[in-house]
Image (cartoon, rainbow over all chains, first blue to last red; front, side, top):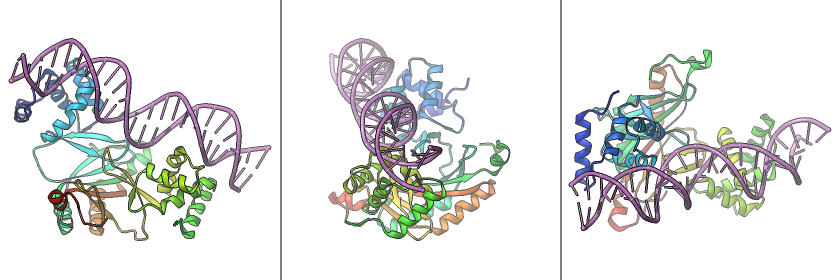
Length: 155
Length: 155
DNA sequence: GTGCTTGCAAAGACTTTGCAAACTT
DNA sequence: AAGTTTGCAAAGTCTTTGCAAGCAC
């Protein structure tokens, strides 16, 4: 049962303290659950795992903490559209990621795309805007899946 | 009171016929309402306008037809995240569009980004996927708005 | 103690769906 | 006539919120 690494926990605690927020058992539970997620996860999946680790964690708490986790930089939100409400744990690399979403096998691939970042920035600045965040999403079809109903690509 | 141009209506009718679906007054109403939208619009805005033109159009009908309009290529969906459920009428140009979303003044700018398209395609094909759709979304801050509470940029 | 947090359940926002009547072809 | 479409209202899905009790500091 893998739980959150000390480093991340400390970083989150510091973040909370800096905002005058409190370090609670439920918050630890949510953070631990984060590390049982593989790749992309939903609020609900996170809740399930958090409750496995600490059944005092409620759905409301997960929803209330998700924005804090995003703000602290520990996770990021992935908005791919109406029926894909995902989050992902941030890796160390701060390079811009593009998401390739396979509409057949439902996998989401994170691709490094530093160039993209430059491009978006350039365009926005021409409009007089300061870039805060950007993402490239590519929806694609999976020929493997189409052919024999399964896809061997790893996520 | 601008209504849908003949060309678009015929194209939608043809699309419907090709799928064995029917041409109804309500569908015409929704299509007409499309042309009263400026830039980006929500399902609800479309409903309001459709009902102004033809009060027999219900919310359910709008929701049932939105996917057909997307499939026919007349409009496209813009998924920018949880609280931004937008659609937009497709222009003639089929070039790839990037969306720059200003988080201060809430405007959405469509920027042509043909190069981006090439990039996404290249990356996906390396993964063995066929690109169906892609979008670049840039969230930005508006200095004008920050300064004096309003933004003079036109959408 | 003060004031942030929590769980619960209710409320919200947006979208989908079952059904019988109405309409297109 | 056959099969699609509609409006309505109910149901769904995901997320947010009010409240009183409970904790962190």
